[in-house]
Image (cartoon, rainbow, N blue to C red; front, side, top):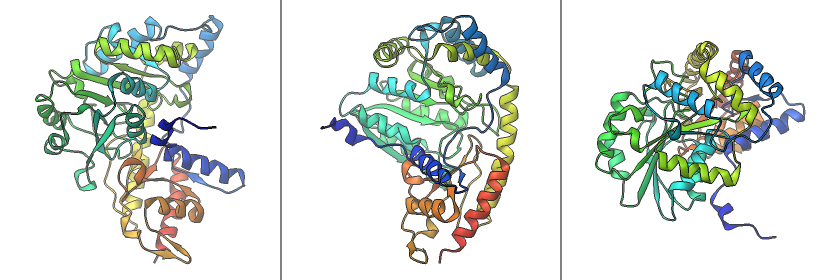
Length: 396
C-alpha cells in the first residue's frame, strides 16, 4: 500500500514521542518522571465538570453548529472584551477541537504552494509541520537565550520576502516561557505596517499563565486587529486538555473560510465540552490563578536547580510552564559506552539513565536546548532534578 507523499513533510511531534516512550517504560515497572508534556497536573475545576453533567442531562448530545453554539461564541466575544479590551462580533469568532485545529484551519485557508510563513525560533513543534503539510515553506528567525528567546524588529524585517503570507508566534511561548511586552510587540508591528498583506497568527493559549503581569496581545496594537488571528483555548488555564476546545478570533472572511474547512473535517467540537466551556469562560478565574501560583513556585525551584548544575544555562521564563535550558556544554561528553552528540541523544540518555523524560530542543528549532515541563508536582520536580544532576555529572 502506498501512502500520500504529504506524509513525508511531517513527523509525529517529539513531545508525543517522548510521552509515549515514558508510558512504555512505566508499563515495564520503571519509575519514570515525565517532564515531556505540557499538561497541567490539576483537575478541571468542579463547576466546569458539573456543567458537563448538566449538559448531558439537558440533552446536549446532538450535532452542534460547526462554528460553535451561539452562546459559546458570545462567551468568547465577552472574554476578549473583558480580558483583552478587544471588540469582536460573534461573526469574528469560532470554536474548534483544540487550539491546534484552529491553527490548522487557518493554515489550510491561507496557504498555497510556495507561500512562506515566518516563525520565530524556538517555536511550538506543530507550527512548522502544519505549514509544510499545507504546501508552504517555513522561514525561521532564530532568537537566542541571551535574547530571552524573543526576536527583534530588525530580524523580522530581514526574514520577510515577497512570498511571505503569514507570521505565527506564541506569547507566552511554548517551549521557552518567553513573554513579549506590549512595547516589543509594537516594535514588531512597525515592520508589519510596511507589509499590510501579511496575516499575523497570535497563539495566546498560555495567556493566563503569566508571572509578570497583564497579558499583551498583538491584536491590541492599533491597526493590527483587522489582520490578526488570535488563537486561544481552555486546555492550559482551565486544566481542560482532554476536553479539546480551542477558539479563535479574526477577520470575518477568514473565519467563514475556516468554518467551511472545519465542516469537511470534524464539524463542530464536542457538544458537551462546548456547554462546559460556556460556564468556564463566563465563570471565575480563581482556580486558574491558584494554578499560576503553583506554577510560579515550581518555576523558581526549577530555574535555581538547573543553574546550580555546572554546564547548564537557563533563563528565568516569565510565563507558560516550561524551562528551555542550554545543555550544549555536554555535547561530546561520555558516560561509559554512551556518547552525547546532540540534544536528542541527551534526552534519550536522561530517559534511560535517569528515568526522566524531557524533549529535544531540535523539535522546537534550537538543538542546543531541551524542553522541561514543570506542569507536574513539586515532589516530582525535586526527584527529577536529583536524577538529572546525577546523570549530567556522570558525563565526562
